[in-house]
Image (cartoon, rainbow, N blue to C red; front, side, top):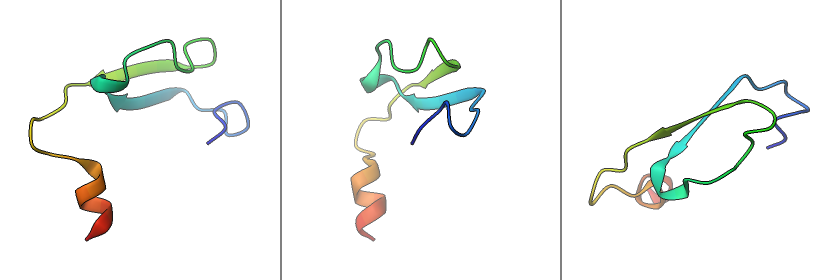
Length: 45
């Protein structure tokens, strides 16, 4: 996804990805990860 192209204001991602992602383009909110919950499991269903 291109945050600049879509004029993203807030980008939300799991805190296991904590870093400098997109900080120059929008607000980044890190949500705490929940042990045992993986998005890949949701996508596979």
